[in-house]
Image 1 (cartoon, one colour):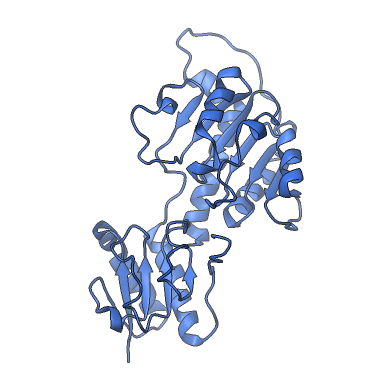
Image 2: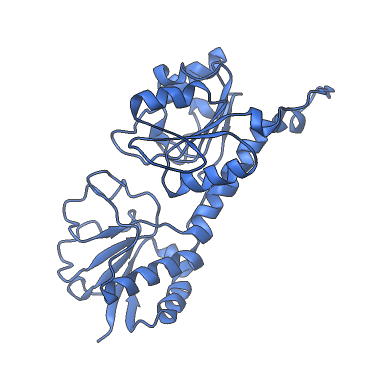
Length: 311
């Protein structure tokens, strides 16, 4: 008897995922039916995006697991009708690699001072060489899969990287900090800060007026994680005083970022439109297919979400 897999996401996503999922599910040897319109009582798995029309999971009486195609799960973890295992997207080939490339690119951009040469309307001859990477401390807030991958890439380029997480982690090759005292230490030396924390009640406004004041004057912020990690008003105030030298922001509390938001006009802010990383259908489909195969074989699912922690 085939397993029934419901694809529940925006209609345009089906066009992107149908062929990769069909290929990946067949490659792992599954006997399956994959549709966007299965009867709830017949569904075994849901390949899911939190902005889909499926919000009440109660009718899905034989559901075994929900496979999220996003890395972020904050929009679904609190759903009381979802009682089966929930997995998040961890995709080294696509999502992780994309984040590593974006973060590395913007760290190097700020480290090398590229903006002053790219936008130079007065044709100033600024013959000042940047320091070497070993002289530019970087702190990454959030030591999950993405944070660890970005830390490895930056370390390989010679940057001294400090990783901070809410709970202790042992990560060879990094200065590891955790907890409130660790956050103060991690920020105190950071000339560049990269935010890759999940969006939870505990992480909201991790960077606020008090924590921004801990940074060396003129430090740079790079946020490809989640918008609520930063207190917007506190950041603007810190930019205005020069406490923060520049902020490159890819994520925001409201997206798309409203046209009248101060970030657009502030000379110390670079806005990018949530492009730091994206789920790639081909590689994401392979992750999903392999996880369903594991579930059917009784091996347990990978990338399970801890709903109490929120990620």
